[in-house]
Image (tube, rainbow, N blue to C red; front, side, top):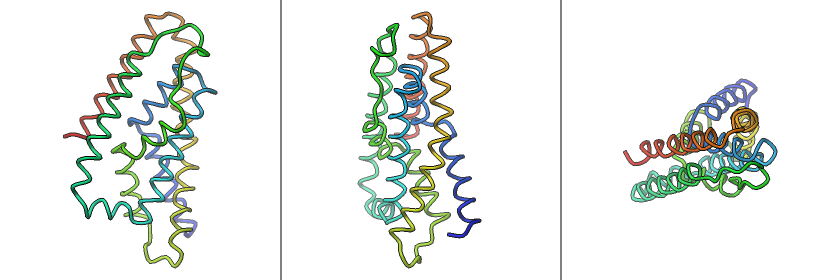
Length: 199
């Protein structure tokens, strides 16, 4: 990859990672529930999950799924069901005074979620279609470079969302009623994003 191609792809990756979507809502809600440090595994899970999806799509998984169109509706419904379950967990999360007693969305849930997240698939296929040269001599290292670059762009982009959630937890959640309203609002936003999947 040339320096210009790297810069262009990094710019795309930052924009894709920082714009609102289901993963950003999940990271924000996690930061609000358990604070910054305990929310880091969720952030890393999103970043690693997205990078692994980018790597797989670059190797041809995206073309395979497009060729077998019967798999796509199943993936859409699985994604919608997972989002609805996640939104229910967020909306009904118990409000407790100490973040140590709260449960966080961990690394594995966040990473696996990227594989059923429609925004992740749109970003991965769009990025590979626009920036990836399939005639590269060594396709595996080339795909690995794309995955690594996306990871490096996603981590600082998602840090903004995690910090935002952690600041809310510190300054706004002194009252349980405020925490409940926030949890329900985040759960509703996440549930609403399922419309993008099933419509």
